[in-house]
Image (tube, helix red, strand yellow):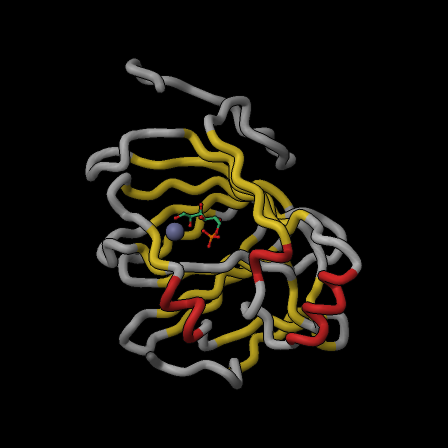
Length: 192
Ligand code: S6P
Ligand code: ZN
């Protein structure tokens, strides 16, 4: 870990950062129950267990005052008519926000609060997206040919709460309809 201020490079066309400490790989098998079409999920999984998305993290102490940074790469594809996406989470410390900067590809960020607000923002290269404190967030790759690649930074003490989303899902889903992304209600969403 650095003990002096440091720089690193982010390739403008996407790709991996010039330095990182941790490479997290999420395969399709870790997404069970996250997609609406369970039969399509099992059918895809039976053909193999492809890498779904990857996160390159720069390690810093997980304390307030530090910023945790890295790059996520979401590969293209669909489960049924839903585009490949991240699991999504609330931060454990709910009052912590996050900044995203899109490097390549195209996508959408699906967000919601415990109070019932929701928001879906399109996400394309050059755009900064600010996720306010309290908002759960999931990124969706709405291209079927290109990776979605973005830089992120969030407070060191934020932590991750995956359980709430695993149990209740997000209120909104992003599906392909006539070749384009469409925001629809999640029929299985339930408040727990
Ligand atoms: C962390 C930040 C991202 C995600 C990454 C994978 O707070 O939001 O680094 O961890 O994009 O998503 P997820 O939902 O599997 O953590
Ligand atoms: Zn986050």
